[in-house]
Image (cartoon, rainbow, N blue to C red; front, side):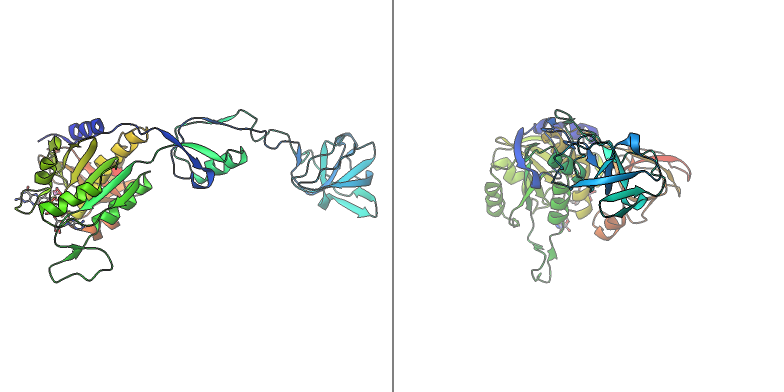
Length: 389
Ligand SMILES: Nc1nc2c(c(=O)[nH]1)N[C@H]1C(S)=C(S)[C@@H](COP(=O)(O)OP(=O)(O)OC[C@H]3O[C@@H](n4cnc5c(N)ncnc54)[C@H](O)[C@@H]3O)O[C@H]1N2
Ligand code: MOO
């Protein structure tokens, strides 16, 4: 059986970068910026008032100084004249500062009678003006690659980039297999359960940049699985869930074989997730995930997310963090073990029951504590490594 590291390398070999396309700005959040984007304008494009008040000459600013108000500048409506000595322009936040002015006295520091304003309070040294281009200048870039956050989208909007170059999202076709499964909302028969993996994996992959096509559940017959594979045509990656083990009804390997799958590997020295299989059917990379719900999700984090990142041209590496064990751990066996755990304030504790069917435990976990094969017993206080989830 191969190691987790070897399996990940083989899986990464199955996929390649998908290239770029344009997305409307309003749909760019969460996408991967494909190349650097340059601002098409200065922001602000003019020196702008940062407070409501009166625009004046700084050389004339002192307590008790008096000015004649000769006009108004509001956001979107500049004052067209030029400010002379002893003059002020009523100004509002965001308005262009009139020519001749270089200071805004805030309105709290003046009293006004008719056309005359008098500075009544010490106005301080701050001119209350944002210089032109203080935020960014024409040509300033937002650097790729990056996953666009809401903050980046706001910046792109301000740079006047209505269409954003982004990496194409990997299309993942998900096939759940098994006679025992029905979709959430349906009425299960007495021997049936609800397909949960499909939805957990869909959420995980979509949160990491993929577009997921959930295909109809394949029943435990060759014909049904073959139909499901047919429906997956055109996807960048097809993933089956379940039917990967050695039981009489575990048909994925047989059907994939009939369809000409070129196998990359089967079985990984890990826990959970041992009966993982991968290969290529024609041009389409295929991964067969084990059916146990926790196994499928753990394989999603450890193997599928790196594949998605490779397709999105992001670093496919797994980030391992460190925390201090809050309770001792017994020795590990021969398989790399990803234990459901909770990290709080730098302390990590594993859950008592690590059975790979327990979604209620997985939902409480925020970490997968990684135990190397044959890791010796560990005492409380030792540092261990984990994958945040
Ligand atoms: N004799 C052996 N038996 C098993 C071995 C083994 O090495 N020798 N491996 C065990 C391990 S480890 C795993 S993991 C499972 C994986 O089996 P399959 O991939 O064939 O999965 P299934 O048998 O189809 O299902 C396992 C379990 O998970 C439930 N399941 C499946 N799909 C879904 C889904 N979409 N949503 C929710 N639950 C699902 C299914 O009902 C079963 O309870 O094999 C062990 N056996
Ligand atoms: O891989 Mo099985 O996933 O150990 O439960």
